[in-house]
Structures are given as structure tokens and as C-alpha cells.
Image 1: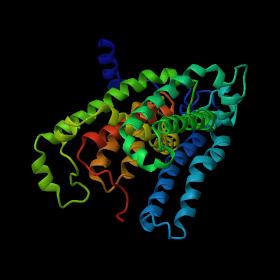
Image 2: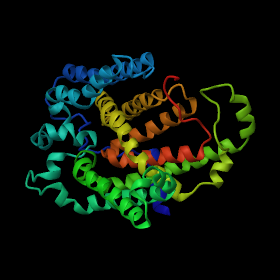
Image 3: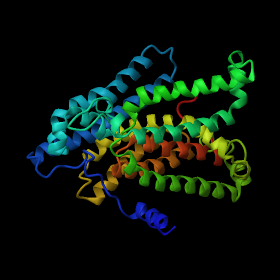
Image 4: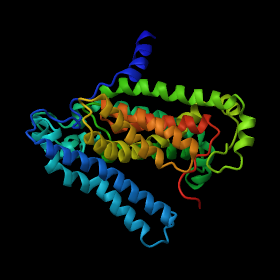
Length: 376
């Protein structure tokens, strides 16, 4: 218990920046102050410009797929942020933020590991005197797969009726029902291990990220429970006061009802799908936008710069949930804590798992709307 209390306290008072993160200015980079300043300004402007264009496309089009330019613009912006931007940045930034050893690893390290992603090349092929990661870290791959399968088991229990109705033709007998569920999970597992994990699971630091993830998971649960208790103080008055505000009105069962009906299988069932959605959000906001904003500030030397980098990163995550007041507040706080966590361990899957539990607990415990974006 003493360890947990010390670590909970540490997460609020100390940030141990990952020295191999690719975010810290290298002291022997040999670049002029003017060059460094230009690169930092570039990294500050770009994420806000790309985010602004994304939000403009969403709100002007109303996310109507019949608006001819909406999908092309979304594809172009996503392609730029995910693929093209790192390609353009790499020649200008490799000597600034990568150690000499990391520079020898080449563009793949900058593109994948620096953003907290898995490296598919190292996943399948031996490199730099090391065996392929799928072999070297097979215990980690197996452990993550077992954890996800436990969530899948919860989902099968929670959504048993819905699965039975949707796939009634394939589950006409009890034997077929058992086989179908087994084969469904097996196919997903194969896709995870051989298609998804090479890209989304960074293996060289996943084990070390577990201690950070476990502490953040505790914070996530505590915040959700505290939020539930705060809403419970005088929820009828809040519901009446906010009923005419689409951005703030409370929805669904009361906070007390939600707490009393909380079920571990229901939490695991929703978490089973939410962890991947959480990963996708972290890919955009932590893997791309936050990475650039951390390079925009001198986070290794100045705690003020560290705070500003996390604050500006959190602002993007909060703004995407406008006009939902409650979600904007929650995600701004969560985005700030997530940025601090991501600095300490560059692993987006671990962060996505935390995000998945956070989103699940908010959905289960807080009587708020989860709707975001333009009205339909």
C-alpha cells in the first residue's frame, strides 16, 4: 500500500521524461539557436493548423457524407498527419531530437517508436543484432493477448443476447454456438498478433510501461468514482437547472443508480471494444499532435515548458469534444494527465488501454451525454 500511495503522489509531483523518447533536444546536435527556434515554431503551428482544418471540415459539412468534399478532405488531412508529416519533418529534426544510436536506427524508429507505436519491421525481422521482436518479446505478446481475451470473454457474457440474435443462423445448436464464439475470438486474435500488434504494440518498453499504466488506471477509477459522488450530492437540482441546455443537460440513470448497478462484466465488455478506440484517439492526439507540441517546447530543461506542452496538447483533446461541456472538461483534464504519462513512457497501446477504461467508467458512472460534434 505504501508503494501505491508513493507512486500516486509521485504522478502529481514528478515527471520522469523518457530519455529515449525522441522529444528532448540533444545537447550535441550542432544546430544554431535560430534553426532550433524555427523547428520549434513549426512544431507548434502545424498541429493547431491541421486540427483547425479538421474541425472546420467536420463543422462546415456537418459530417454529411453527401457533401462531396468532406471525405476527400478528411483523407488528405489524416494522410498528412499520420504519414506525410513525419516524412517531411525527419530530415530537419533527426539530429535535433535523436541520439546518435537512434539516428543509426533510421527513419523507422522516428516514424514508429518515437510516436509510441510498434515497429512492424523489427516485429518480424531481426535487426541490430537482436532477434525479431515477435520472438524476443513473445511473453509480452502473449500477456497482452491474454488480457484482451479476458475483456473479450466479458463482452461475450455482457452481449450474449445481442450476439445470439445477430448470428442466429450460425448458432442454431448449443454446439454451434460454442464453436462460433470460439472461432470468432480466434480470428480476432490472429488479426491482432499478425496484423495489428506489429503496428500498435511497442514491445521494447511495454513491460516498463505497466507500472505507469497501473498507477494511471488507479487515477482513472478514482476520478470516475469521485465524479459520480459529486453528481450524487444534489442531482435532481442539477437536472432541473440544466435540462434546457444541450451542452450540459444530464442524461440516463442517476449517478446513484449507475453506481449501484455497476457490474464487472459490463465494464470489461465495454472496455473490450473501447481500448482500441482509445488507441486510435491517442494515436492522433498523443502520437501526432502531442509529439509535435513537446518538440515545440524545451521540456527537458524547463518545467514551465513541460507544463505548457501538456496544456496545449490537452486543449486539442478538450476542444474536439465541444460543445459537450462535461466531456470537454473531463477530456481536458484527461488529456493533460495523458500527456504527462506519455512523456514518461512512449507506448500508445498502454495509453489506449487506460483510455478505454476511463471512457468506460465515465459512461457507466456519470449521468452525462457522450454526444460530441455538430448537431444532426
